[in-house]
Image (cartoon, rainbow, N blue to C red; front, side):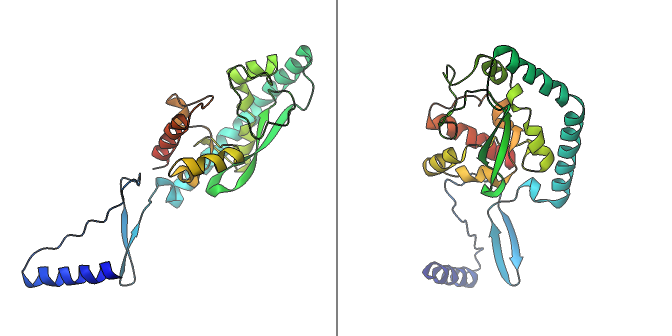
Length: 228
């Protein structure tokens, strides 16, 4: 309130002296490059975020493309992939469920169950510990599935259901969301878009195990760049 009174006084002085008045708001540390100024009645309103996917037409086009791409894949190539993985597990003696389902943080921070081909032995740390390069929990065939990214292909089911998009920020375990949201500024901004099977961070080299907070911060910055 005091700041508004001071600004009003400055504006009056400038008007009396025939001086143009410019007000520059400060948003230090905020990643958005552009702000959107609109009016709500007689009040000027600054919206801090204005993403391309806020546009209803863009949302419809993206969702339509997701349905077409995932539907085509699930009806053509996926049955052969499923058969290959099933046979691979049988031949290598892997026991346990074919699929692995895990709670991840999705669009607007909502939880959803992500599908993957199981690549590890059934273990109690699956929802807390990220897989490492030489993780002893990985099965030999599962290690191949992870290195070839075949384990991620069931996520086209998530895309078809609407939990995910083909392109978007990779969804993290809920435990990691809780940890990193407290360590990295603007971490939760990455959830303003549907999570994806792959994204700008991944094709820019930010993939695999994250060993440091700085590596995760780099991923988040790439995710926010994509959203904006």
